[in-house]
Image (tube, rainbow, N blue to C red):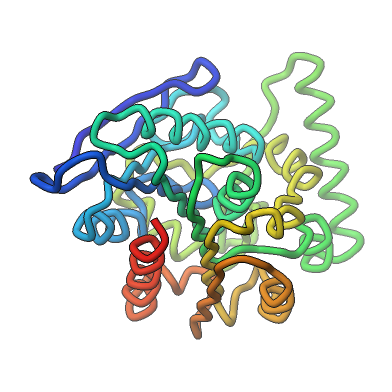
Amino acid sequence: MRENVAFKSKGEMLEGTKSWQEHMGAPRPAVVVAHGFSGTKEMRPLPALAESLVQAGFVVLTFDFRFLGASGGEPRGRIVLHEQLEDFAAAIDWLGQQPDVDPDRIGIWGTSFASQLVMTLGAFDPRAKVVVAQVPTFNNLAKATKARMGEAAWRDWLALMVQDAAARRAGAAGRTIKVVANDGSDAFLPLKEAYDFAMEAGATVPAWRNEVTLDSLLLNQMERASFAHVDLIAPKPLLLQAARQDFSASLSQTETIFAALDGPKKLDVFDCGHFGVYYPPYLEQAIASSVAWFREHL
C-alpha cells in the first residue's frame, strides 16, 4: 500500500509517500528514508529500498526536503544541512504519530548527503533507534573541495559565494549554479559519474531541477561537521555502507573511524564508485544488508 502524505516543517509543506503492507498488525516498526544532495523521493535507490523494507514488515516514509521536488519553499534549489535536519526531524515527528507505527521503533536511513543527516540525528535524537548511513563522507567538505579544485580556483569559488551572500543580505535574489555538469560549466559536482546518475534519475522526476543556490554551498562548507558526532550514536546500532572508489570519501578514513566506534556496528564495503550502490549488483546487496540490519535491531 502507498499513500501520498504531507506534513509541515518550518511552515512549509513537505510532500512524502507512506508505504506499508496490509494485514501485518499494528503498531509496527518504521523507517524514514532520505535521498542525497538535490535528490527526490522517486530517485533510485529509494523506491527499491522502500519496497524491500515494506516486504519485511516495516512502515516506510520517503519525502522531499524543502525547496526540492514536490515540497514547498522558495528559493528552489536551496540545500542547507541544518534546514534538512529540521525537515528530517519533522518526518520523524509525523511518522511517530501514525496509529500503525510504534514510535519507540523508528529507524533512519540516508544516502550520500543525507548520511550526514542520519548520523547527526542518530547522535542527538533519541527517537531514532537504528541508523544506516550509505556512502558517508567523513572528510571535511571544504578541505576536500579545495584539494579537488586547487588553491586558485578555490579562492575564486569562495569569493563568488561570499559575493552572492552579500547580495542576498542586500535584498537580491541570489544566484544558482548547476548541481551536475559534463560540459565544463560551473557545477557543484562537475563529474561524469554524478552527471550520468542525475540525468538518468532526473529524467523520470519532472519536479527535479539541476540547480543549487550558491548560498547553500557556502553554508554547507562552513557547517558540515556531522562526522564529528558519529561516536555519539552509540549504543544505537549503526550500519555504514561505503564504496571503495568513492570520489567524495576516503575508505581508509572511514575504516579508521569505524574501528574506533563503540556499540553495535557493521561496515559494508562495495567495490564501486559513489553512485554504484544505486545500481545492480551493488543495489541489491546494499538493500539486503540494510533490511537485515533493521530487522535485527529494530
